[in-house]
Image (cartoon, rainbow, N blue to C red; front, side, top):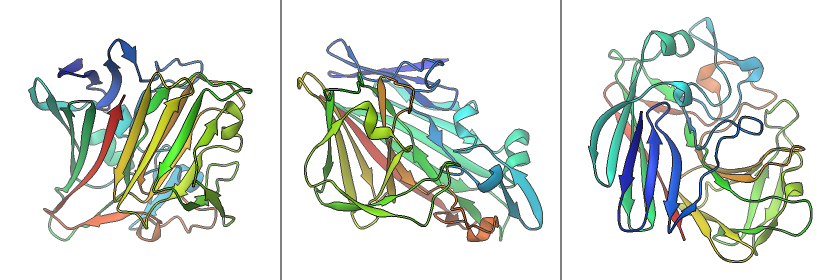
Length: 291
């Protein structure tokens, strides 16, 4: 089932499967990627309870080994619609028999979408519903993809990061794990967006020093644009397929990171994870602005 929200500027559609934002239109323009399975079969998946890949797609917790795919399982789970009005909807995923096979924790994950003029405000609220004494360990993030006609020649769009300053770039190896080799990436001026930008996998920048970071894609002819603003997120991923040419770019606020090549595999020492005590909850926020 698809939930439709509308206000004076936007019409958006959210699929109950994964609570995934699948369409955003403004003045007749569709912003979201169409999920063509020949390129990338998703629109804007939610990442939970991990971000990125696990080493060998597995981890250990309390002496037991668990297997989990890249970016976790929330994107492939059916959510419940717990409330809906014209410009807001709230979705819920709770632990179930399938998730417990991959992740031995009881949790509630609430996802809310709220329209405010030309903006979509997204809140991801995680609650530990485990028995007393069990800490919930998790990461979370978003992976929205926007339609951008990519070429190997003239740029079709520009990417701007605010604040405009150098950022530490997290390097990924061929296995999708982070390496020990990092570099500083200059974002003091807009970056031309072409297919070649994505050679070597996603660009991941460390934004932990900024309480709010905004990434903006704008068409070269300035006919449309979209901004993604993260609130207290750790990283931003910037991705499209390579070497396949696909007409989308993802701007991804992350509160977590993939395993490194040197991790032990123990969940307790996995980098980028949050913890919540029994009964505690935490909300993570980002905003999308369409123009």
